[in-house]
Image (tube, rainbow, N blue to C red):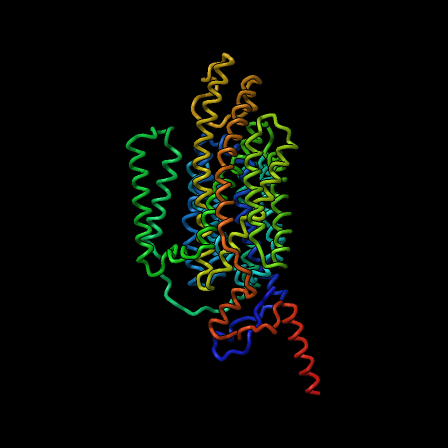
Length: 556
């Protein structure tokens, strides 16, 4: 890995720039990964228990959707703001602040006594998650060069795998044990550890001070536009007709707000999403692919817990165990592809393979039913995991590799913004489709069996299978199994868009300088490396050791 080795500087600013050894970089990386782990854990720990949570709070299918959507919405909106701040102020302070927001809001969510309060606290938690999403990737770019970053995909993949596998498992055990409320407190000690480790190990060079300017107008308009769109998707055809004045007001208001947001961005001194970045072909293709991945992945994986618990009558703990195959696939593919990418400097072929596997996995999952063999379901989930592992992080890597160091924060956040936006839209759209489809299937199934649908209690509240007679429980399981399979079929062609975008993405050989090195070079504190200069940290350390030995020999 390429680390920072500075030459003596004459300014105080350059004197403050640290020299990072491999050990220091790994220590810094541990704090960053702990922060990312907290972000993943905060979401995944409740994924397997969410059906139980909503049922206990008397919530409906739309409440289930909005508990997830609220987090994705605020994550989407806040991510570019965090990214812009990362280009202007102390990144270490920002990620610590994001950790505090994320964990404090999670603890408040654990005190919820209604779905409305739970949705509100999860929305607040999304603000912290937006910071962790944007800043974690930016800080990794600071200390690891694009070319060497693949070697550390194994560590990042391990953290993602641990969070995504361990979270549902831990959440299921807690839910089946002391109760689901404790899920929201489990991230507190990890967050405290992350803050301490970051404070002690992450040393970044001081940046040239400049006034912090936040584009409040653009952020407000963007928030209004996205929120109106998601609200319309959620409530159309349930609270009001598709063709109604409410639809006209919400869609029209969303289009107007988003149009004004674009206008505001063209005039802002420090736009939230710099529009000139879209002149970068790699970024544009990565944005399109990220939206597709967000819709396909977030929009379907969110409902896997419902499939396991409401279509297969599994406990939250068992539900968490049954998602392991997808995470294993993700971990294996991200680790193996990352190692090869570091050796070759080429990444496009892995992204193409990932997009093909993601599309194929979604299609295969579209064939499942309420009684499909778990062996087949596991195999299909492995395929999805393999695709995501090769695709998602490499989209960010490709973009960072083509951006100027002063715009890495904004560019990274832009890709994350559109990926999360795709996820929010996917969850809202597919959640609405699922609610309508399940209701329709259950009504027709009960009618065919000669059972009064009112026995289900009315409304769209999630059923508790343990309280239902056997004949009704089978109908409910069939309804959820069929409806959730259809969600994957809807997501498959959306995933295919990512393949088209990746095919048009221009591959640029990966750079060999970390973000800190580029920053110091731009500020005049690091000489340009010629072809004969060391290109890896090991070589740099060897050179330093040799210089030291020669100096001692001369002194003698």
